[in-house]
Length: 202
Image (cartoon, rainbow, N blue to C red; front, side, top):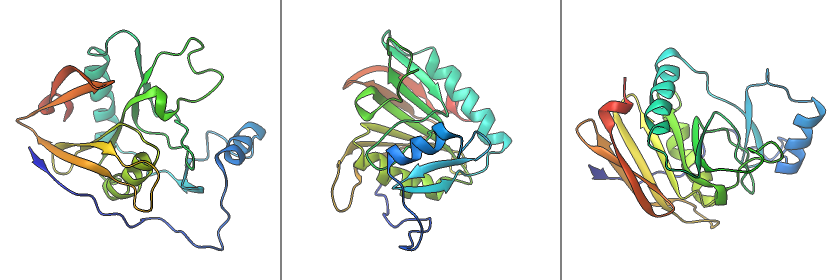
């Protein structure tokens, strides 16, 4: 287990000539049918960005992680799979999110950071975007805990202590858990389980 820092430059185009959209505008595009399920995009920092393509290691690991975590969640928490969360400038669709139960099962709104205990990205081809852009976006949005399941390096990178909105949003703590370690699952500041890294990796 080692601590690490995360670089901050963006990995996707941020050209002033490209149209930018608010979260509300992006949601209206979806509601109107201008964007559909066939458009593999998400809103990141006001930009409509193509999502990274998925492969079999990614999808198989996503299923594996979902099974392991689903057994460990205490009452009051749900696991969402590749579904949107709403931040002030983004509507990302993390691979997995642990969210508070909602009486309407999020049929009338997407979860916000206040609803979200953990977001997880499964990373191989998307590693740079997940480490740089997604970490910055989730930190700015005050998502309290962010895991990257890093398939290339066979470890789980746990980001905590988000900065919130600032000039250089980041997580103050980034800890890498290798295949012989166990990752603490913490919700609402309370450890609820530990998960062996080897159980999460293929």
